[in-house]
Image 1 (cartoon, rainbow, N blue to C red):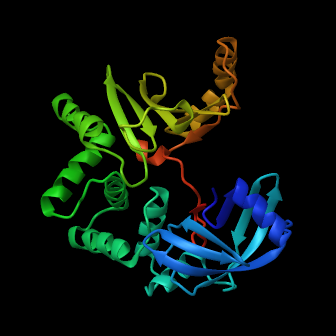
Image 2 (cartoon, rainbow, N blue to C red; image 1 turned 135 degrees about the vertical axis):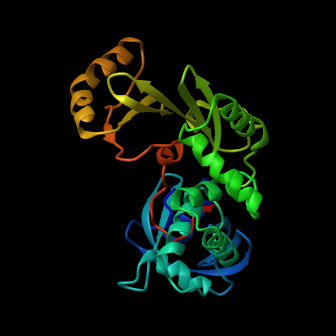
Length: 315
């Protein structure tokens, strides 16, 4: 679901199409009737819809919506921005009563990436910790992820642990230390808010990470998981393999350290593709990307995009 759209499906979609005769390109208006936390009630014409949103809205807010698609039992409404020339992130800050600035923009992107509600308290709370302890961007991202899975970071001791945890994700810890943090990931962390769970296992100096959404108590579903393999290669140094399954099709990607390795891998990747197809897998093309710095599993987490002013709704 796009961050600046409202998706409506099923019976409610059919009723809306009948009442409003929705067609692609059509512009309609909606009003926020009530808003409590992430729960909102929208009025479209004479219809009332319950919804959830990551972007703060207030009762009385008026939205202009354009029909992006309307067919079968599915309607996608795109929120239009009346403030021409205003950055999308700035629109959110204006709603929150905050002055736009680069540090807050980075935090906003991380909150959206890890499926957390955006509020003034959330933004300023993280911002104050970053300033107090002079945290780098990768540490702030790690802190937001921990918050997304229900682990608080709000003390000096927590910050010290955070710094060690960053080394863990960079593969810079000793074996005993690594086992401790693998146990932390696999046992303590429990996704109750949003974002991603990360399971981890060391394999002879290499690493396997499994990303899932939803609580770790839920049964795993193949299409809601992504597998990341970190391999230390004699020929290519560090390689990352990204593997996901969508509509019974295997999506595989490779991340290497330099352009020279990419040139070689681009020539050889067809052999991997043919081997997977021979083994019975349906798969797309295998892209090879270059990471100039030290890659961690957080660099590979899918990004929902940078469209902020809209609302992400489930009706």
